[in-house]
Image (cartoon, rainbow, N blue to C red; front, side, top):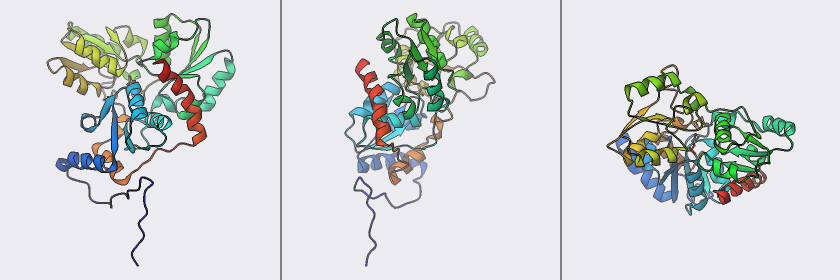
Length: 329
Ligand code: 13P
Ligand code: SF4
């Protein structure tokens, strides 16, 4: 009697394990698997350029959440970090959400466990909790509204001025928003991004002396000592659009240098220089984002895993503040 084949919930069995295609064949093999699996590949601007090039949508956190919500594909392969794939699953639960590497986390999300946020909420009972999207589903579920760096200012302004706010988990984005909106009744949770905290203001000033004509572009996850030098501050997509539209020819980039791939595509005649880290190491590359590789993308599509799953009660609790964000965006 022949062996019974176990079917995946999608009705398609994983392909039998076969050796990895050669680097020259990898791109075609991924594109073939995408068609076979009816999969959409979403990639953040911090992914390595090879992954960005094989993705169906490349974007910032907000754009990718919106793409995940809209997609009709059976499978979403999310090339980013864990909280982003979680967001895709919360917004589109009937799709299979895959990630190239389940261990790709985020220092902001990891630095804000739900019990620690609960302690802040207990200390500030009159405050509504507004959380940056870089947090776990459990923290989202405890929040009144979610924001990304693209929509945070607009959403904060939608709260009445007299309403006190607890902002979690990024202290630098929180302080930047307080300054931008003039809100003083905001308490900021003390989390930070290990990548954006590493930029050296001294190295930035030295670079500016070497390139006096250059504009400094910075992500609001950077510390104030870097932000105060910036000509333009915004989300990854806002920085990319600014670089494209600006008449300047040279830019110093104070965010993860993955964004430079799209900047060069849109403005090939311009120069983009990554701002170095404090000690000259390559710490401005996000170690979590960079866990994903084209090989892992291939394996995830071939094996239909690792898959991101969420308990339904948690998903529903986290959906409410995300829907509020999308309706206010
Ligand atoms: P945005 O792409 O939304 O600006 O976010 C940057 C980031 O750090 C994602 O982890
Ligand atoms: Fe998290 Fe920072 Fe990496 Fe973004 S760059 S995923 S905020 S650790």
